[in-house]
Amino acid sequence: MDALVIAEIPLDQADVIQTLNRLVFGESRLVQHVEHPGLLILTATWKGTLVGFKIGYPKDRQTFYSAKGAVDPAFRRRGVARKLLHFMMSRVYLSGFDTFQYHTFPNRDPGMLIIGLQEGFRVTDARHNDEFNDWQVELSKPLTGGD
Image (tube, rainbow, N blue to C red; front, side, top):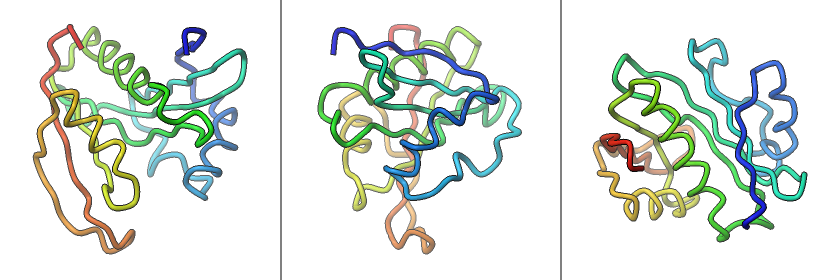
């Protein structure tokens, strides 16, 4: 995946990720509220084809929350999610955040739990989510600039 390009896009161009969002999540909703100040949308393209995206926003002055991310099933296990994660963590560290956080549903898709633990994230909360009938695990990591 040497030709993978990670880029930031503005909200008014978010329609480019809708097809992948529907494919992976079966829904058109990107995040609960796209009006979050500081909303960050990243895309991952390979040879001009969208293969992944990641969306996040400031949770508070210190914590940046990664709300949603997806990788095209045909491009999984090639490091796309990890590269999106690293890019977002670096970007928000430079913006002054000191903690990075996200939730995942390990029984639906264990990949992001595994990546998080491999990348030094700690489980900071876990509870059953009735809407998805799965455990919702919160992972957090201090940002150091070397992420």
